[in-house]
Image (cartoon, rainbow, N blue to C red; front, side, top):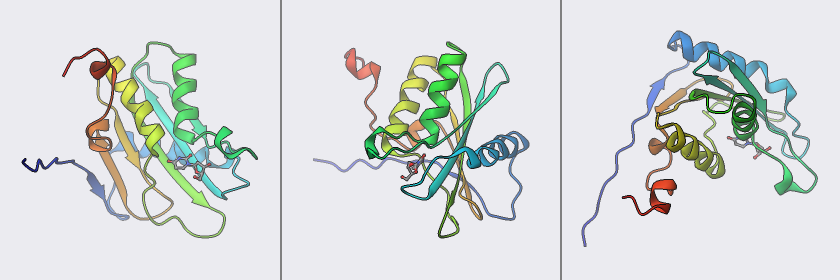
Length: 164
Ligand code: THU
């Protein structure tokens, strides 16, 4: 037996530190879509913005349901719409922002496990890494280049085909 250590790389920008211009623009689009969130059950509003290789920005917000599991996260709303509106166009980046009814979101919001799996599927399909920009309302922004930084040991199409 041996213990294997896996390293993940996260770029961190403190509240006062300027983001790269493209990241700032995408995060602003995510923030501007927050008001479209339908979150009467959790009171937690999430906005996502996807930057495509054709220059389009597609936004989405979380959409909840009285039957809780029927709701969908902002990231998947945006990613699935992007893929259906522009099939075959690569996803370059996604920005995530959040706000809550009862408290300030002072930490970066990271995608849930199911959204990470969807990001893994897209990366595998397009053979190109996605830049993931994570923010709350205030403070720190975290950025990763590639889903392996959020989903190490992921299951994807390669495993299904016996590759690796
Ligand atoms: N949510 C997202 O939309 N994205 C995330 O990254 C985290 C969670 C939503 C799902 C649900 O509507 C609410 O936030 C509380 O979990």
